[in-house]
Image (tube, rainbow, N blue to C red; front, side):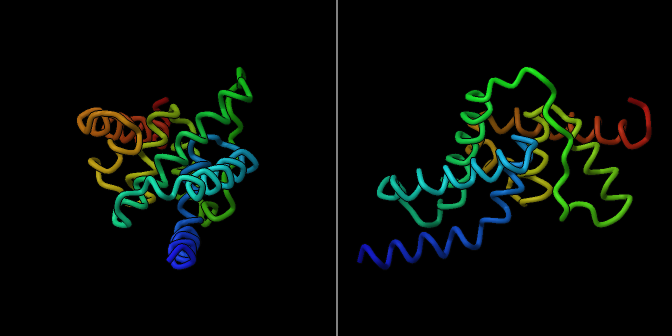
Length: 158
């Protein structure tokens, strides 16, 4: 039974790893920190797997752990300077996506986080609210603000 749960966990992680990295990168803004956060989150999740009440909630649970790891990593590093503007290679498909990627990268951490979760990873506003521990109305407001800023960045108004 324990081996079956372990196999299920690692198969589930394998399916989410790309999304986890993209999400961690959206928060940490560096490849190394994103990799560290994903690694640490997987270890913490595995160690506390018995707290997962339902396999259906695994994605939300995993992303909440990942978010906490990202924030902890940032806090530990005590970043005082602007986070770097590195963009993952998988986002450099064409000029249009570059403009969009740069615009998303210029958003504040809170706006960037909900934007990546909603548009890139496909979470609903209700799921995002659970992940970021904020009311759904706050998530919707952040998404609206992010859309306004992205449009302004791309159109050169900011």
